Length: 257
Image (cartoon, rainbow, N blue to C red):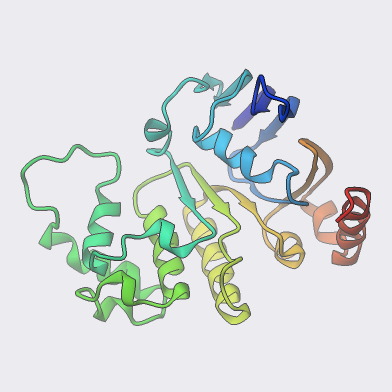
């Protein structure tokens, strides 16, 4: 279980632009949950992910995993159990390196590097097997530099690489937003398969309300650092996309958007 307790987060503290985004924010995510997070810009969605991953500090509160306090744990240590896929496909891969080199880099996540070769030839067959699941033909392009791939191919690789080593949590930060509709559908289907196959606790921030409703077993809507809607399991499956859109539009009007 992942728990956030009494989280307080300030931006621009001590200035005229000081903002307290989270005021004693609480959230519990059960093991194996696939949580979709929606909300308007500035609602705290990405800040929530950054706090969980340790990318930004908090002023008050606790972050616990299975009861263990990790609030002060460094980001690189948290990354050993967390996989993250960003909105920009370029952020999850290294464009100047080949597909093989990228796979090898992801395969060595959390390990110490020394003077050994970066790529283990004994793992090449395994990389091909993993890439073949994407159905993009990348298993036959191991020597191609990732920078030559399409955005969809890179995002599929980023998703695969983030889950290549054993992890407990998968963090998806609007990971389909920069893709065309057809490619976004492919990435969502791939995401769903990986989450189910590896039984990952997943948090997905998305602006696509249909994806938020169709995928996962829990949905929350955030507004000004608070959860204003929380639907789980059957209750989530029965909520129409139109109802979510109506609430979203109502909030947007109130905010002047």
